[in-house]
Image (tube, rainbow, N blue to C red):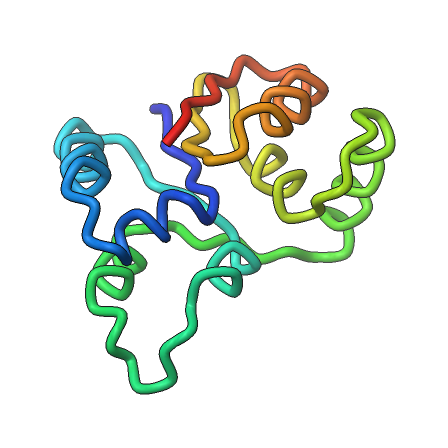
Length: 127
């Protein structure tokens, strides 16, 4: 089964109440797609200490949030070197994606380079 791998742009859109993004994610869930991201993407978007990011909080309950360990960090560094890109969060987004997954991103250019370098069949979809 394929997944939607979310970068920070998807979360920002939901946090801002983007009905199109919210509908897109609901349809994906209804069709049995998994939603996946990693903890550093959450760090990029979580800002409210009082928990008033209600839409974001609801979305996170439906998302498989992966950890970043040393091995994944090393793989991300190697991927950045191969692609001559510089964002380790984008690199780890590409690395947690599996064959057949779609990456929803606001950084299409870099994610396409990173996804291609993983040698997996990944679709990079603009937000």
